[in-house]
Amino acid sequence: MTENNERKLVRMTKCMKLLFGILLMACTTHVLAQAGSVAETAAHTSFAQVVALDECDPATFNAALGADFCKNVTLGAFTTLADLFSEAASGHPDPKWDFEPDVVHLNQGGVVRVVDQGGEPHTFTEVAHFGGGFITDLNGGEQTVPECSGGFANLAVARTRILQGSDSQIANLSKGKHLFQCCIHPWMRVEVDVK
Image (cartoon, rainbow, N blue to C red; front, side, top):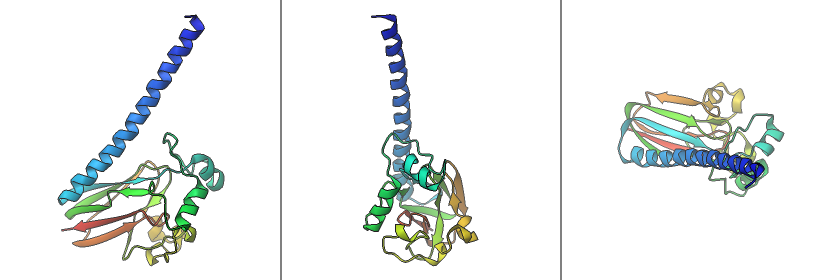
């Protein structure tokens, strides 16, 4: 084997190891979110974590919404901005935009931590009833719920925004069922049951 071929082989091996590491990290995150889903829905706890996920395509989202809007690092499972809108309009929103788990059981006085592991911002807004968000074309025919009206000009909505890579905590929820949704992607929904 020539020296040039050996260098290529070493570079290719390093790239494969890096790719494997990234894939392993992504799979581990998904498994942990799923495992958390099972554990947190099985019994009431004093702490629960909800993970916001999405598969925004950096090229199409950033071209339309500004550089660095979408910071997704997934390995090619992207959804373009046009596809996101067309799927929502057809009444079949992209299931890769999701909060995991969908239901959380919590003891009164407990804390819900929401982590945005997607590529773009989301909101985690408490609503009286699930419905549409402030981007009409993503609502799939549902009316915008009052809590999402006005978008980020509404200070109550702006306070619930979670940027990519950040988290937020909600504490001291009263007993009963609490409904949370993303006011941007309104099919992202979670029910928090407080005992």
